[in-house]
Amino acid sequence: MPGSTLTRLQESFPEAILGTHSRLGEDTAILKPEALRRVARFLKEDPRLRFDFLMDLTAVDHWKRKPRFELVCHLYSRSNNARLRLKAPLGGASPEAPSLTSLWPAADWYEREVFDMFGIRFRGHPDLRRILMYREFQGHPLRKDYPIDKRQPLVGPKD
Amino acid sequence: MEVDFKGTPELGFFASRLDDVVGWARQYSIFQYPFVTACCGMEYMATACAHYDVDRFGAGLPRFSPRQADVLFVVGTISQKIAPVLVNVYQQMCAPKWVVAFGVCTCTGGFYDNYATVRGIDHVIPVDVYIPGCPPRPETVLQGLMMLQEKIRKEKQEL
Image (cartoon, rainbow over all chains, first blue to last red; front, top):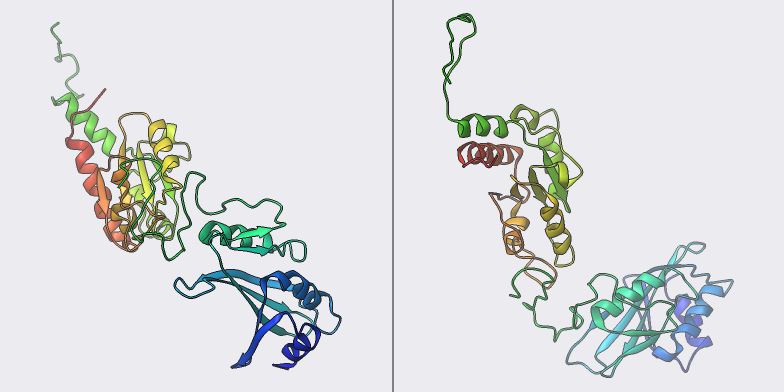
């Protein structure tokens, strides 16, 4: 049932939920980042919800908006065939979020990718280093302030 | 030294330049190394298999060690991260050696105008034949192969 998960979340964590919406059958909850792991554990372990599958974890750079970054997680419950989107706004020059690797091992490489592309650090991640770009690469290419034509070649002319 | 051909009239002979003979032999004994990184690989396989059959041009036996190859087929997008590997593979090939850029990504970077992609492999290694297309049709590949054969035949042969 769309919406019923959100109602349960709001009842259980009234202080951590910044907002919710349910559009076209898709549920979204916006959380305070510091509550992310707590809420995620509840969603995974609650016997009626059982969101056992982390389908995606990514981020958005809203650039001039404050807070600048937004972490996005897509969860799936195999037993209820239900989906839920979690969003957490992250601000500051060095954005940080709690790692979800202890709940879903799948979060490991997603978080490394988000770190590589956006420079968001995950507290409690076992091995937070670049996953796509090479070690010598400077900066985070999916940040909106990364120059669109800036290349950092390892060999050949430095164009 | 004088050679007496009178004793063997049934074995004909012809005179030629050594360069021409060696070039003629080399153009039909192309051992290629396929450096396949992306979707062009499918088109490469289609060209190499029986329907289009590069074996008709003496290029039917790919070698999977660069040390046994004459022609480096670079097939697919080359990222900044893989570029040092490509250079390493090229440097391991014995002379005489040739390079074919297969597909528009290897020629110019294609539409990948971003932080991750090398804008043409000629930034890192010399190229003999460019085969454009996204991906190139097998006929285009065969034309490129024949152009390479002509180039091999006509050049000064290092022995």
